[in-house]
Amino acid sequence: MSDLTLFIAGLPKAELHVHHVGSASPRIVAELAARHEGSSPVPADPALLADYFEFRDFAHFIEVYLSVVDLIRDDEDVRLLTYEIGRELGRQNVRYAELTVTPYSSVRRGIPAKAFCEAIEDARTGAARDFGVDLRWCFDIPGEAGLPAAEETLRIALGERPEGLISFGLGGPEIGVPRPQFKPYFDQARAAGLHSVPHAGETTGPETVWDALRELGAERIGHGIAAAQDDRLMAHLAENGIPLEVCPTSNLRTRAVADLDEHPIATLVAAGVPVSVNSDDPPMFGTTLEHEYATAARLLKLDTAGVAELARAAVRHSFRPAQGKAGLLAEIDAYAAAQG
Ligand SMILES: O=c1[nH]cnc2c1ncn2[C@@H]1O[C@H](CO)[C@@H](O)[C@H]1O
Image 1 (cartoon, rainbow, N blue to C red):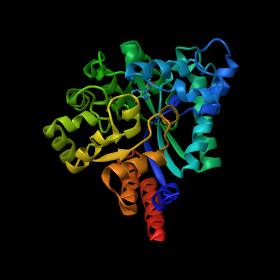
Image 2 (cartoon, rainbow, N blue to C red):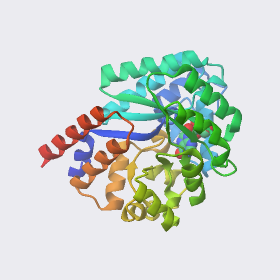
Image 3 (cartoon, rainbow, N blue to C red):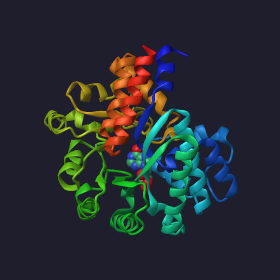
Image 4 (cartoon, helix red, strand yellow):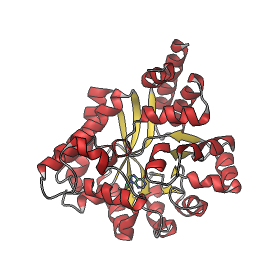
């Protein structure tokens, strides 16, 4: 292992853009598929999942993603999946993670909202106790399901209000799913004290990022890499300190970018846009947060000091309370100093 790889592995980290079902490990996915043998296209053999997670384009990725969502049939599946995500984050020395959860997709498949929220909260307690990982939730609207999903997601967020819930998002495809229609729901979520973190500028242009800012009150943007096509937008993000949650390997694997060496993260950083580095749907993209840090280090030509700064940026951009931020920043400083 290279020195940088070792440094990244031990570095205390925070993750701001990682999806619940998208984080299901091949073992968990295969275990869930085996429980529903024959009724799902998802292979029950972990060795076959790598091929299953090859995506023709973004629409195909969403199709595969939803086939894994279909495997989650009851609150026990939710509890197991979420607790195991905590285990994997702890293995990578992630101390704090804002997990994007889509309750609508599971409630629509028959899991009662109350049972779903109890399951993720049980897992949150277990992850903190057993793995030292502080999990928080972003409840996101699956955009392809439109306004009914927005209505239901807001109802669950405000009606159940699990303790770990801190933000409200919008995921799924951007093409054919204009952001402005969701304004009433984001207005209500923000009025209730939830932070606004919609996806935008992942598979469409800068205009969806502008929409997310102007219509949805976005405090951070999921992906947002299309901002690199608009100097005025990059200047706006830089001047107002609005961070992008960048997920390099995701963009490659969903074909949002053709080649990692063409990824716009260096352009964004050079323009002063605040960025954090994230894994998005790690097993589906054959990556880990550690690997995303190594990828960003290569693309941004970072040394260990630069990589430590990536970790600090994620903490600063997080919605963790000030005391928790200070504690994790101090841990990063101590680790970086000890590694010399
Ligand atoms: O990279 C991504 N972009 C957009 N949506 C995503 C991504 N990864 C996972 N999801 C998830 O896809 C589902 C669509 O119904 C949503 O739950 C969204 O959270």
